[in-house]
Length: 260
Image (cartoon, rainbow, N blue to C red; front, top):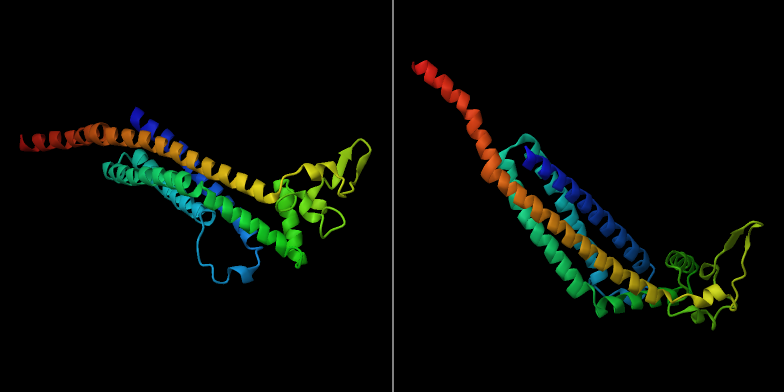
């Protein structure tokens, strides 16, 4: 039946996006956690607030896992051509569509805001300040600089007052050319380091982009969900009902033969 095949295809697409949404949310949570865990804990002993960059990954993660479960239900209903399972799928799919749209709205109206910018900026600055007294934090912040291709909290010049040169993480450590690899000096005249943005600005920009991407993926998944819901309703009202009549027909024929 064409409708069941179409429902399989839509469920496959929805499952892929649900998996991507879940994986991206987990990755985003790990990235935020890797930065916030480096803060000076003494400054946050009485801070029990949950900020949007910490909450948004959980929202999309829950929605993504819910989508994966619903897709499995849709596959089972379409495969077995079970009317009850397709009805259950349609009900949960409606809830999922509302959840996806709601998550996108919350992300774009609440999380994609200046409060998120301030949280990321304050976090990066606190970590950067903490690097001056903790060697482990300094090494971890260096890894952040390498990952984000940034230097310092507000910019490369943050290091002028307390270091003799930029940390290696602000520069390309090695140059790979025809003559092999060699160390690059990372002093205050290094052009690459001086052209880099501060990690607070880069982190804010990436956070905004990730939130928008998650919201966009959520809306697209909701659109796929609406299409699969329409197909499921068509199956409930049409295809599956006709099949149930066709299955009962032989039994009715046999009962008439017995009566004769």
